[in-house]
Amino acid sequence: MGASQQEPLAFSARVARELRPAVEGRQGGLPSPGRDWTGDEWAEARDAQGNRRLDDTEDFVRIEIESALARNIPVIPLLVRGAQLPAEEHLPPSLRQLVYQNGMPIRPDPDFHHDIDRLISALNQYL
Image (cartoon, rainbow, N blue to C red; front, side, top):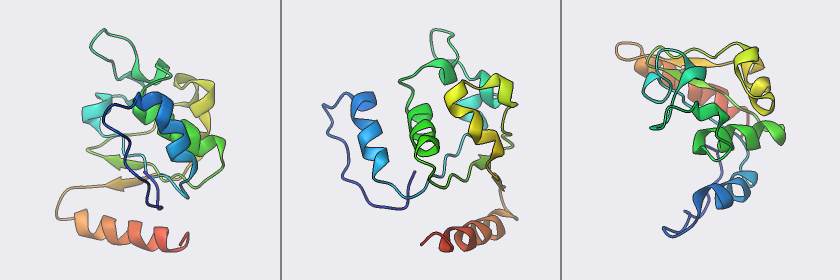
């Protein structure tokens, strides 16, 4: 998610417990909630038990976004496969700032390379 390099988490690690400290060393975030993760509506993605993923405090995507927002580090939501950011009221309080981040659509060809060039230009201002 971030611009800095981190050591990978150990295979035996309890990921949710170790992910927050790992994210804290990062300088920026690029969450990319595509429709595969989210379904047709980003805020309504469900796990295998039918629970909303955004309500799971140990969901990896939520942990990364939440940690970045809490630290006021830049977050650029990458909107892939037609994903859109949800309305603020559909998010847990700790994620509501996400709707005020300027997201960037990443479209398939023929627009993909143009979108990635725009992303690289945007990232260069943070390096």
